Structure formats: C-alpha cells, structure tokens
Image: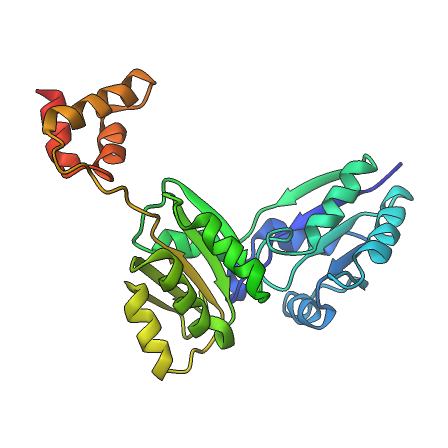
Length: 274
C-alpha cells in the first residue's frame, strides 16, 4: 500500500510556534524532505526527533521529486518542510505536491505559521481582500511587468523582500504605485520583530540612510478609486444597495463603498438604516 505525503508547516522564527500535530507527524513519518537539511536538522534536534533527511530544493526538483514520489508509492510516509513557514508558498514544495497529485499519491496538510498572513494581520491595512506576490524578480524587465500589472490592483498587496534589495524595491514601488500606505514587517516572531507602519515615500527615504536588517514582508495598500467630485450621498447609497442586492450585509457593503466615495462607513450605514 502506498504511503502519504504530509505538508508540514514549521515556525517562521520562534520555535514555540510549532504545533503538537506537526511534532507528532515529523516524529512518525519514515523520512523528511527538506529545503535545507542543516536548518531542518536543528529543528528536529530541538524536539528530539531523529528521522532521515533528504534534500529537496529548487535546484534538484525533478530528480529528487521523482525519487521521493517513488519511495512514497513503495509504502513510505514523507513529510515535506521548508526552512520556515508553510511549504509550497513561494517554495519548491509546490512542485512535489503537483507531482504527487499527478501520480495519485495522497497528501495531507499540517497547518503552521505563514509570514504573509501573519504580517497582513498586524499591518493595520485592509485584510478583507489581498493579493500575494511573493518575491519580485531581480530581472528588470520581469520586475517592471509585475509592478505594472498590479499598480491598479485595489486589494492589499503582499510582497517578500530580502534586506539587501529592500531600498531598490521601495523606490520601484513608489515609482509605479505612487505614495501609498505600507507596513514593513521585519523578523516576525523573532527577538527583533518590528512592524513599521508608514508610507512608501517615507520608507524609501528611511532606507536610503539606514541599512535594513532581517527578512521583510511588505504589506502595501491597494489603489483607491478617486471618487467623482459631484458624487452625492444618494449616489453612494445606490452603490451600497447594489451590493446588498447581491447578498452582501449592510455593514460590509458600506465598508466596501466607503473605500471609493467621499463618505465614511458610519455615514453610509446611518443613512441606510434610516
């Protein structure tokens, strides 16, 4: 009987964030596929887990992936982990899961921390709808295309960035997005965790002078529609009622419409209930 692939989330910094289920699963599988075996070995030692490790990363995806899938089909259980956070999110584990799906191998997820969602939660920006972009390409053409493609996106944008690229990324975002609110979340769950809520222009100026330290998650405000100058309260209420007719709750409809009209959610809600 074939085994199973377990997709196991690991801490993004603080080892105390690992779940009981993750520890139990890592201790029960036959072997563990790791992005960097040195990093994973430290995690296993901390929890007194002794399991064989195989290297699985972006440079050996095809060969290692087939070998792992063969072992699972032969009856072994495997856990896939990344250095930090959930495998498959901006991570080569995505390809292993796809391969297992193609070969009919059972997969099971063991949820864990996610830097993107954790940063969004403490950003102070809109969390109702968001777009995850991961790392921007270092190739100028691809980088430009990505920023161009999302500059009009109204949902909150999430990016990962390394410290040595941060200053250039902030300047590029300011160029393509204009000046918007941004939360820079640094070293989440670690000793030097920091959340900087500012604007792109202020952040770009800051890191022209200050050397960034640690890994960053950037939460960027989506583009706001400029409300028509002659929009009245009645016009705004029509938009609210349109959303409500589609099944949206009054409070949620008012919150959504308030993003693009010169009236607050409270003003709209008061008018609706009247």
